Length: 125
Image (cartoon, rainbow, N blue to C red; front, side, top):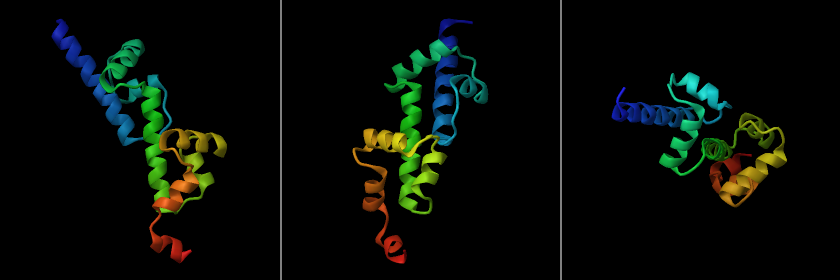
């Protein structure tokens, strides 16, 4: 296999894995599972290096950001409790969820919800 084709295969694998994370942000997955689910032919070390090179972040950091983006949307819908969102996002404790959310957004999930839930929802409660 020539180097250009090999490079294209690895790039496709990395993009495929990123797309899978984007489409399934709340699914907790290992790197091996990601490779398997996307039918990618790439080694773990090469995947880590290539992902960081292409997207400027580690796979784990990217997954966490996507999970917290999904959490922010769930908070805006105001249908689930904080405990339910914490569990849905794969956090074992509410304090670890709050800490991770605050690291990304600079405010707590409760503050986010208060700022982003439409007034209609607030009045109905």
